[in-house]
Length: 294
Image 1 (cartoon, rainbow, N blue to C red):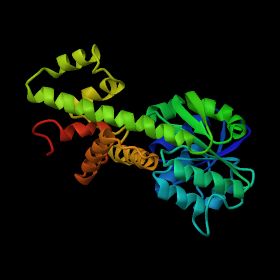
Image 2 (image 1 turned 90 degrees about the vertical axis):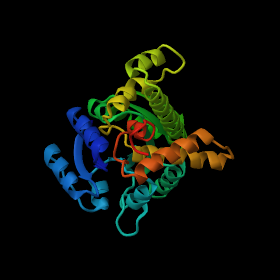
Image 3 (image 1 turned 180 degrees about the horizontal axis):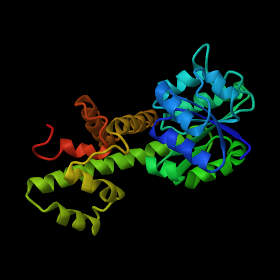
Image 4 (image 1 turned 180 degrees about the vertical axis):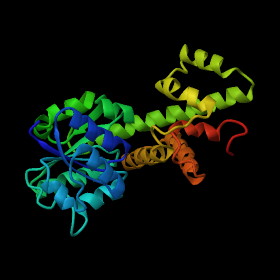
């Protein structure tokens, strides 16, 4: 608990992770976000600083947790000329939690070593409420010695966790998780959409699915929302498109063709193009139910 902690990226996940660690007795010293208003508001709530400069975030903490949107944002905070998190970073530990490509995690790991710092992946497979309650599932990678240094903090953030291996390996597994989840979500939307078009009672269909090989975790989490057209965002279609795209890129690099993932990626990209990217991933049903979006 003596480790000073800062956050870069305080959207819905990052802000709730910061609140959780504050509740657990960790000293939150700084928060930073491209949305300056959001950072200032959270800083006032937590009683910490909201520096404009990334170097000042690093100076204020021993452990810096990042939750950013994509590879470009990751390069911006770590590798941009002039002001970046590696300025004066010797001895610091960076815990990078967003779903990004394995390549960027490896790039940041190597850059951290050159700066005398340490970079650890902590890929999340949970929702906003889990972040607030310390019930994340985390997949971690990097140096195991660094993992052990921050394990007490990681334990307060997560209900369960898995250390997977060297840099990039957790990002690979997280890409697999989201790829399969998104495929399952798209398949469920098509099954329910076809059932509705045939005039079946969707409550009956959901019950039958739950007792057969059509059962899945997304049947529990998303089926009701698909039927009711309630797509309040827990995991956005835009993020689903990005993450399925990451899996597709990994597959191409491995020399594999993944047609189901390609079709799912195209569906989520279509949602984004239609202006539906901020809907929850369950909103993919808007593309498959008759009479909804074409």
